[in-house]
Each structure stands twice: as C-alpha cells, then as structure tokens.
Amino acid sequence: MAPPTTTVPGDGAAPYVPPAANINAPGETPAYKNPFLWVPSSYLTMGLIYVAVGTVANIMFKNMGMGNDQAAFWSSILGFPYTFKFLWAPALELYKTKKFFVLVMQFAISLALVGVAFGLRLPGGSWMTPVLTLVAITAVLGATQDIGTDGVYVTTLGPAEQAKYLGFQSMCWNGGALLAKGAFLRVSGMLEKSTQSYATAWMIVMLAMGAFVFLAGLYHTRVLPTGAKALGAPKSFGDAMKTFGHALITFFQKEGIIRMIAFAFLYRFAYGLLDKMGPLFLIDSRANHGLGLSNEGVADVYGTFGTVAFIVGSLLGGFIVSRFGLKKTLLILCLCINVPNATFLYLSQSMPSSMSIITVVVIIEQLGWGIGAVGHMIYMMQQIAPGPYKTAHYTFATALMGACMMSTGAVSGYIQKAVGYQWFFVLVMIAETPSILATLLAPFHQPDVTKQPAKA
Image 1 (cartoon, rainbow, N blue to C red):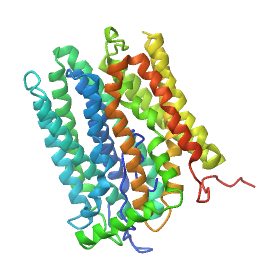
Image 2 (cartoon, one colour):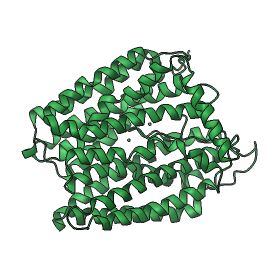
Image 3 (cartoon, rainbow, N blue to C red):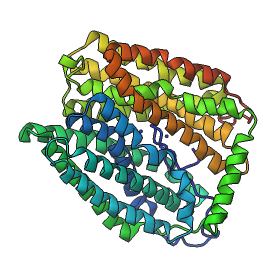
C-alpha cells in the first residue's frame, strides 16, 4: 500500500525519481502555487488508482464470478507497469512538461474507467476480455501518472520543502488507498444489496471513480506546477539508453550484490502470497471455507482499520530504526512482517463470526506489515542505492521487490485452489523461511546512518 522518492506505497510499487532538479535560486520567489493546493490532490489520486487496479480489482473480479486463481493472477499481473515503470520513465524527460503527462494520464484514466464500467455490463463472461484490457491500460496510465507527479514534486520543490511535505504527501497517498479500498469498496457492497447485481454496483463505482479522477485532472490544470527540467536529464533517446545500460551494469558490480538482490526480492516473499488471498478469504463464502464477509465488511476491516494500522505501523517502524539503527533491528523488522501472517492461519482454523475478533486480528497483521515494510525500504535506500547512480539503483531494487509481490500474488490463487485455505496459510508460514534467511545474510557495506545520536 512506503525512500529517496516522494511516495512509499507499502505494497510494491516501484517509484521513479528524476535526477537533481533545477530549483529556484536562493532568495528567488517560487514560481508555483502553494504546495498545499496540489500535493494532497496529486498523491491522493496516485494512491487511489494504484490500489484500484490491484487490491480493489482483485475483489471486483471475485465478485464478478472469477475464481481465486484467476482473480489473484490478473490483479497481480496488472502490477507489471508499476513494477517496471523505470523502463520508460527517462523518456518522459525528453518531451513536453511533467504537468502535461500528469494531466493527459488523468484524463485518459477517467475514460478508461468509464470503459471498465460499461464493460462490466456485458452479458455472461464476455466482460472479461474488454475489462481486463481496460484495467491493464489504466495501470499503464497510472504508472506514467506516478512518474510525472513524482517529477513535478522533486523538480519544483527545493530539498527543504521536499522534506517539509514528505510526510504530508505520503499520508495523502495512503488517503487515496483508504478511499479506494475503504469508501469505494464499501459503496460497491451497499449498491449490490440495493440492485442485486455486482455488475451494476461496480459499474456505478467505476463511473464514480472515473469522475473523481476527471475532476482531479480539471483541478490540476489550474494549480499543478509544470515541473522543471532535471539536471542531467537525457538529451536524446539514445543518450537515455546509454545511461540506463551503464547504470544497470554498475548495479550488478556492487559488492555483495547477490545477497542484496536476494534480500530485495525475498523479504516480502511470504507476504506476497498472503496479499491477494487475505481479502479473498475474508469475502469468500463459508461454504467455501471463507469468512463470508460482505464488501462493506471487508472495506471496514481491511480497507479502513487495516490501512490505519499499516500507517501507524509504518510510523512505529520508522521510530524503531531511528532509535536503534537498521543493522540491529533488521531481523526484528523482518519478523514483524512475517510472524503476524499467523493471524490468517488462526482465522482459517477458528472461523470466527464476530466482526470485532476479525477486525482485531487484521489490525495486528497490518500493524506488523507496516512495521516490517520500513526495514525493506530503508535497507534498499541505505545499502543498495549508494553510488553514482543512486536513484537508478534504488529503483532497480524496488523493481525486484515489486516483481516478488507480482509473481507470488499471481500463483497464490492456484496454490490456494489446490490445497484449500487452511493449508494455504500453513504454506505461507513455511514460505517465511527464505525471507528470514535473506535478512540474516543481508550485507552491510555502507555505514548504518539511520540511528539518531543520543541527546546530551
């Protein structure tokens, strides 16, 4: 659902950060509107679309009749553009302005979501191909929107202002996630009860989501800065490819790179299996050995309370690292992300009907996820990224993280279908082993600068 980038979504999106920006000279009046006018709306929209094409689409596909295997597979594969957006990010430096790409993407996203809405009303199973195609297009547009939005942020604001608004815009990104899997998911359940049709319910939700993004685009035409040209930006496509190739080569030349790659990829291995199946287990019928929650119930438990718990966990994880340092706490953070997976094993064994019990259990799991995710991001920043291509190497590392979430999520439904929920959650616990081993073997070749000095 979070680094030397503007946003830290906790579920595997690979961010892109342009090179150093051309910012205003000391004492020069900033030629842009107050960041409070555009930072919240920009990152709210980013978070909304990212979660919509992943988490929300997963539940929508399930509601529309897909099995767990297909729902988890397609909602995971849709994360491909977010994982590998660094491949086309440098090309955006060659043309137009960053604002141009943000606006075009937002208006195009709104049209794609309208197409998804009407595609859902196609009879029988004929909705699948057009809807999957349009959601995939939405994912590509959303990933490109992220590149432009991050570019506006880091090339418009100076270092001091970036630091000032960093926590605020991260909160707004999570606000978009809360809106998508909280409010919009809840409305889908309410509409299904009144219309007796998931197709109609989701059609209305997709139309509303498209309208939201369209209005955001209109608003951003007035308030979003154009973004500056980045220093060191490629002057041609060939120049961009040459720089990319050199950055990739030097990435694999880093000392201890094999163990670093193992850590970046495997840290979330078990959670990647759980990520798609957790919500589907909550929503699946009791006849299928799920908990039988409604969309409203999942929105409350997972979307609202779970998201808040993740945010609190992220803050707590950051405090732990700043207090004791990353090297001393990395294994603890790894255990925080893995041990709480046992909560779903408990739910599958006890099958509680009490919403209070289910909510508390999910809060524990999401709290641990938030705490543990911090260790992953900071290690990649501190140990993998340093060097002449710091931004590119960090992005490569986050792409490995995203590739793990995408691949494990894609197979999770097939595994669950083969063994059932109870054994699936047992396998999730076993799958924690590679994560723990990779953490134990993770090298620390750079100084651990995360620990804050004790006050005199």
